[in-house]
Image 1 (spheres, rainbow, N blue to C red):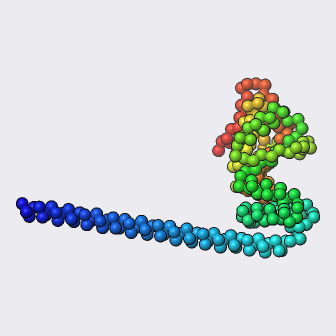
Image 2: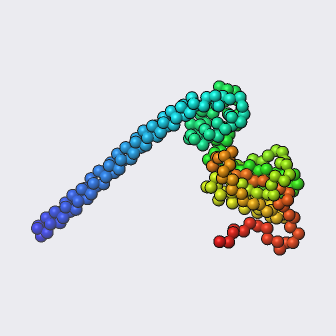
Image 3: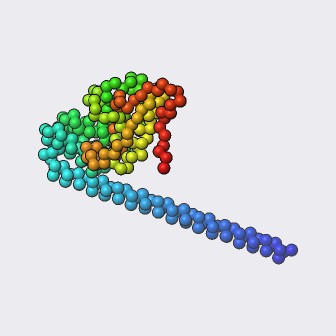
Amino acid sequence: MKSEYIAVITSVIAISVTLFQVYIQYISKTKELELAHIKYKSEYRLAKLHEDRSWKYKMTEFMAQYKEDIFSKNLETKLNIQKIMMVSFPVNITTKIFKDLAKVSKDKEWLKAIKILKRIDNPTVYIQIEKGVPEAILESITDTIAEGDISYFTNDEYIDENLTKGDVRYFLPNDKQLAETVLKDFIDIACEEGYKLDLELIPLIQNKDRNIQGTIEVWLSAKSIQKITNPKDNCFYEEPKI
């Protein structure tokens, strides 16, 4: 009986030792993971700091090289240099530089550029409208697009006639899908108001004036809009069959 009792105690002690060893290994592994995480965060901060300093140095070199263009009185020259800076440097660094330039030069163009930078990570659509486009469509578009994630801007003045038959334009290959989404939304909005809207998708890849990712233009023409008289008419956008 005594030997059985000793065997039980020995077994319990062995299990306890095993559990303790497992616990020690767990604590050791946890500390190892914590140290690895701390090391990663430290290395990441150093890499990020180095990257920021590198970009700031490149920006300083750029501004020194193109100082005359940056402070030019010629509007076109200034807008061109702004576009180059927008696509060449990170948004956070460019934003700070634009703010500093706005303070130093008292030039409103740099303030406008800051607003563009705030939208640079989001899609931006510019709407050009020809006279004769039904007000019902315009009101519906204004009410609907304001609820989405895309920034829309409508030209305050009508465009000249015969500039378009109705189209959606994109300027970078990666923006094709975005342009198709915008085209679909406009066709569906017009359809809900009882109009059939025909819009052509136009790639303007070689155009360097709109070289910011996520920039789309919608050109609305009265010639591209037809009033639906037959309820059976299907005006909603249909995906092309492949």
